[in-house]
Structures are given as C-alpha cells and as structure tokens.
Length: 239
Image (cartoon, rainbow, N blue to C red; front, side, top):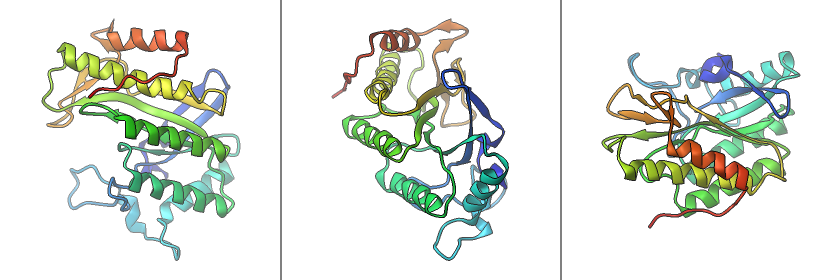
C-alpha cells in the first residue's frame, strides 16, 4: 500500500547532492482540506488507501504505515511528502499538520514536495507569497522543498498562441525566482513532468505544456536557463 502515491517506484538522484529521494506519499488531501479517498467504480482518479481507516487521532493509517515501513527499510533514502493542487491554504495546512504529526511520532520526513501542475494564469502574488511560506516552513523544519512535476495544463486555451507561451514562461520564471531567493536557506529541487508538449487524456487537461515542442526548445526553456544564470529574484506579475 505504499503505492498510495505513484512515485513509490520513482527514484530521483539529485546530481548536486548525490542523494536518492523517494516520494513516500502523494496526493493525500483534497483542495478543500478533506482526505483524498476512494470513489465508486474503477475509472476515476482516486485514492483507495484511505478506506483502510483513520487512527485514533484522525490521520489515515496508510500514511503512517508508509513512513513506518520506509523508516525501517530505507534508512538511506530521503523521504518526501509530495502533494498536488495549487496554493489552497486549507489543503496545505492539513499536509503540514500531517507531517508534524508523523515527526512527533518519531518518523523521519525529509522533504516537502509540490507537483506544480499549473493552469489558467498560473500563480498570482498571493499564491507566490504562500509558496514562499511553504519553502520557509520546510527549511525551518530541516526539510528540503521539491517542485516535483512542473508543467502547464490547458483546457480550451490555444497551445500555440503567444499569450499562452507568455503565461507559461512567466509562471515558470516566478516559481524559479522564488526558489532562487531561498537558495542559501536549504535544499531545493525542481523537476519537470516530461519534457515535450503533448495532448492530455481527456477534457482536462486537453493539452500539457512543457519546455520542448516536438523536440525543439521553447521560450520557457530559454527563460529558465537565463534565470539560472542571472540568479535574480524579482517576480513578473500579471494584472
């Protein structure tokens, strides 16, 4: 039941650190702050593991057991509590509360992850401020912060339009510059969810943007490379 998250099979070697990270649990809380659980049938995005039950303190047993087993059998692997969604505060506070609960039980949690599937106009100023708070929280608690699946999801937007390209690029740069502003405070990583643009599997996302189109670098890639070289921390906000 480790596979309450899809990343249990996914090992990422951090080239700068030589460490191996594993997403120990993933997608545990809904945007409204409720536990993500099972759904009727077998064709929906769901989390079947919550039905194992909650413990006496109201936390899913599968989360606790996943970290208990990993702590015992993977002592040399850094364990990341990974999550999706946007910057919904009620959701993230539930995640942080759960991490604190695990650590108070003596369980090791080494990192906080965010999948960063962006949509719409990306993150606004309030969202970016909260992202900054999450990074600070992780570092103050001696944890790394990991952007684990950066991409941009489209519904009806034109994937080839200049406006869509600009929104994607500015959104990526704002996230990267936020990370750069914290570079002296603790461990951080940024990973993309695939490299090439591609169609989605349904109405949403209909299309998934990354940093290459048919193997050719996009504006977003060049902007990210420049941001890494310049090491600036300013944000580019849209009205």
